[in-house]
Every structure is written in structure tokens, then in C-alpha cells.
Image 1: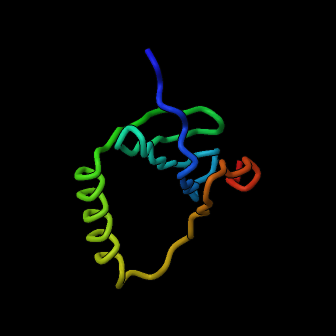
Image 2 (image 1 turned 45 degrees about the vertical axis):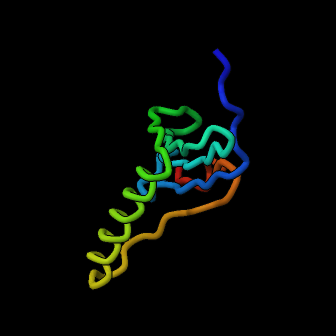
Length: 93
């Protein structure tokens, strides 16, 4: 079985709760899908493959949720980075 190459189009978001928790989204352009993966430290603990239509629906849901939070006081921010895995020290390990 041939696996798609890891895309260079990726973004990480660290969980403010620490312990190396993070989520990564990676575009597999040649295959036509995105992969959302959840991480704890350096271990991938789950993935979801989304075609563009599904990803668009997820983005719409995120936008709705963000709009609902607009009137709430700001909480802790997450660390977001392009193309690289956050260093574990940056994640509050």
C-alpha cells in the first residue's frame, strides 16, 4: 500500500492545557484531501481525513462557534505555527 507523502502545507495549533497536546491540519493536494490529526507529545493519537466539502462544513462550524464566543471575555490563547511541530517546551510540557 502506497501512502501519500506528507504535505508541506500544514499548520499546528497547540492546546493551552499543555502536556504536548496539539492538532495539526495537513493538505494532501495531490490526493485531494486534508488530514486533521491530534497529538500528545510526539505521538499521533488520532486522525480524520476530510474532502474539501467536509472541510468547508467544518470551517463553517468553527466560524459559528467563534461568533458565539465573540461576546465572551478572552481566555488563554493557543500557540499556532506554520509547517513545523511546536517544540515540546513551547507546549507547556
